[in-house]
Length: 112
Image 1 (tube, rainbow, N blue to C red):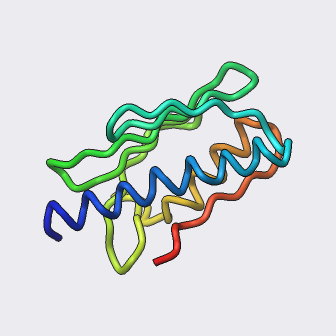
Image 2: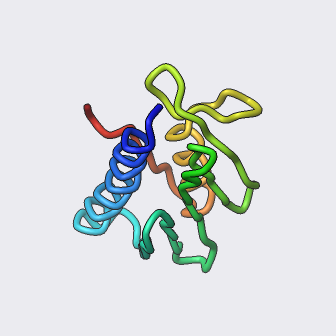
Image 3: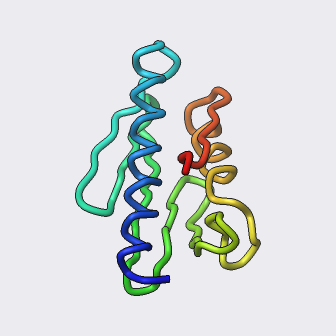
């Protein structure tokens, strides 16, 4: 994958996460604060816990850090897959966010 393709894919991932959280805030589903600095997205939950989603351009990966652990994802077959378990990124993000928010939350891959 070219660097430009990687950048476009990761921008869509981070933007999609921000958009979903904005929808939840508008619908009063959950109050998650979002801070984005370049390729790093920090989600702060009401209980004080955090999830960090960070792009890793040299490796062409996305890293996810949550209370349950740290995970690395590579783009393969149109999805971001865990480099150890092959779990899909948005499934893992949904699971981690649900655990930390204390309610079921579902993230989905951006369309396109």
